Length: 295
Image (cartoon, rainbow, N blue to C red; front, side, top):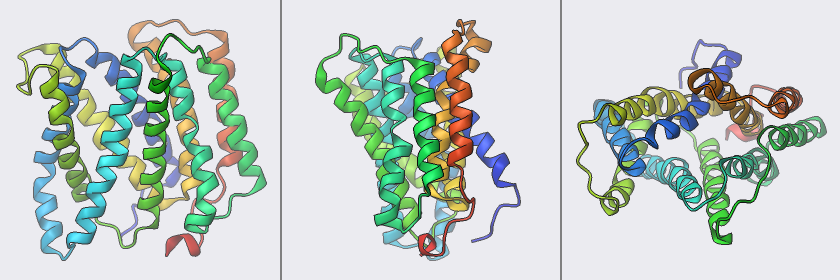
């Protein structure tokens, strides 16, 4: 696989910004008739745009096993992660609490990379992961809200889905090129979101400016940018280092929401952001995976 000439640090900074854009996109989608309809068309359009790259990859010899892997990654990292998180918030789980549960992903990933991938997580990295989680806790708070207990379980399911997808993608070699991989993942995700969109009233897109803006935002920033950079960083770095970047997304989202929507910034958010930056700096570790983890 040809390595990208872009420095890892720049890719990681882009990942933080792009991953945070998903939460802003969710806010835009809240003004549409159906969030699931927005997500359905988001992935339909991406799959259609990337279809030529998928066909080219198939001609180059990527067979059923690699296609099945990408389909599984789409089902876990895109559909399960997004659908469970959105449904949990819809059932009354506060967004801050959902973000906190999602922020367990770096810790869960670090706990599993040793037995699964052979990556070594150093004591300094464990300390950084702990500091980063504390920063998220300070930044977003942890109100329980009035949601049923099982709704919080949906957040854990979504977090676990992303962890499993991360480990599967890291363990797989050789990997399909990024654009055809995103095309397959998006096609599978669109198929899975179709029934949910139908249950909310249908799959025909409305002629509405808010709907078009939300779909465009998700495509440009959250799918091609967010997931594209996530998989690219994972190929260039360790799972623990990439996972630690997730700690920066809740505070960055708050800064973005302040700039775009005028949402107030609390002192706790600023303090939490500082803790997150310190935690990520400690947890970074090496950018290049060990020989064992590249098997």
